Length: 152
Image 1 (tube, helix red, strand yellow):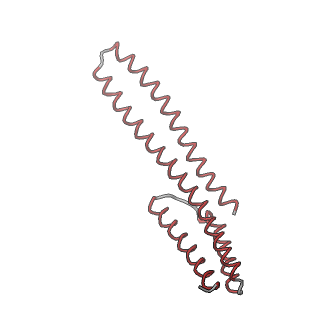
Image 2: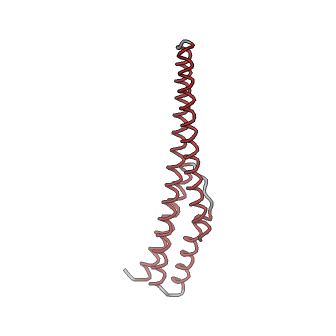
Image 3: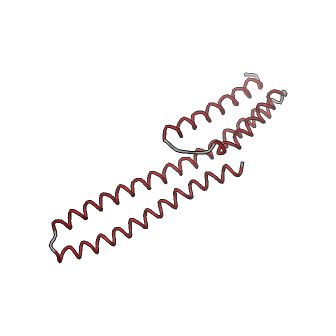
């Protein structure tokens, strides 16, 4: 395969990979800014310009760098997905514990009710703490994603 063809192929592959990432993000219902791809877009534009001006090796290398920048974007998107999933799981757990505690209260006599209320209060505090941590993780993941946008 000729160097020119290899460079053009690398550029097409990079464009295809970006499109796949965008489809996956949309499928997952995540909201990310187009700015996330700023570095990729810049590198790919440079690769296309190099290809057009006959600098095939340079075009090929820039296309490879563009693909590497997509790897970093994918990692940050995965972090965001994990943080959001953890937040969702904690919310569901909190709801389940609330229902369970309410059922226990209904079945318990007054003496037991006080003990259960205290248990519930402690569980609620722990869950609030866990939810706060999960929200912080989501926030950190979103900040990391924004930082990657700003770096480009």
